[in-house]
Each structure stands twice: as structure tokens, then as C-alpha cells.
Length: 220
Image (tube, rainbow, N blue to C red):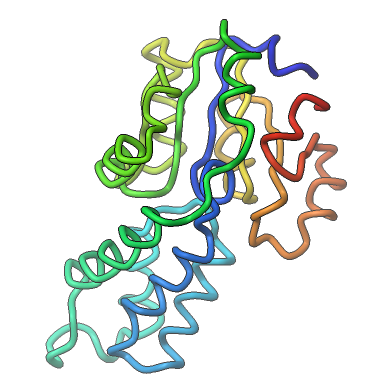
């Protein structure tokens, strides 16, 4: 495969454009800290095991499945408070974490392709961070995120013609692959910052092309 052959190239954010997976994992711990260490670690583990799913779904799972006996009404934060605490921790981390090398050269090499960002991160937060860090202009097709989940975003953007085939998604989680392949996009696994522990087996079992980082994609 050659990226230059795709009409649309779609990128995940965390672990692909930004080295922010660890930022998000720690932010979940911070937000859940009022429930105690065990609950915070359980949420962090659920997040890592379900990379790519929105924070809204993860905090709903937390309050309904991990600490249902404590929520709500015990003077502890509700979901809105969790989201606010999480966003504050994430905002600081995203403003400082590393940006993937090779973006400018990759954009030049795929000048005829439309670029989109589709992430599990909060859409407004992403758009602001990408503007502040000088990344927004790369994504002429738009920057999209939660509260809409990836499957909904992909379906909507294909239907309205913003994603034209052939199209490919560059992601770092199993959910990224499932959401992209379900709508007919090709997929490249980006391994360098991924939190998927068994990614080598996952890539092998699904016969996926992969690269350690975006700067390696000239060889894909």
C-alpha cells in the first residue's frame, strides 16, 4: 500500500499525532482519586483496555460498574465533575506532550489527499489544542471527537462525502481498527506510543500493515 493512493487519510490523536496516551491514563487516575486508589486503578485499567472509546463512555462505566454502590449522593463527584477534573488534567498534558515527527513531510507527500482527525478525545478540546500547537491546518477535512463516538463520526463523514474512498485510518488501538474497518476504511497500526500490550499478535492475526511512528510511513 501507498498512502499517496488514498483520497482520504484519517488520523487518531492519542498515540499517533501526540504522545498523549500516558497523559490520558494518568488523568483518569486523577479524576477517580476521590473514590480511592483501587477504584482509580480499575478505571485506568479499563481505559487502557478500551483505547479509542470516549471519556463519556468510560466515566459512565466507572459510575455504573466500578463504583455503583458509591454513586451518587455520598458527597462524591458526579460524572460532570469527573469530566471537568479529567479535562483539566488532560489539557495541561496535551499542551506539553511530544508531537509526532514527520507530519510536514508526510503532508507534502500526500498533498492530493484530504486529512481528517477522528479521536475519542473531546472535540472542542482537540480543536483548541491543535490550533494552539500549530497542527490544525494539516487537517483540511476537519477535527472530530467525542461526545460522538468514532463509529458515528466515520459513518456521518462517509455519508456526507467528507471521507472519500479509498480511505485509510492510522490508529493505535483495537477499537480504532474495529471502527474503521466497520465502515470500509483500510487501517495502519501505529505501534510506537500504543498501550496495546499484545499489539504484535493483534497486527499479525489481522494481517495489518504497521509502522512504529508516522515518520516511518514512507516505507508502508
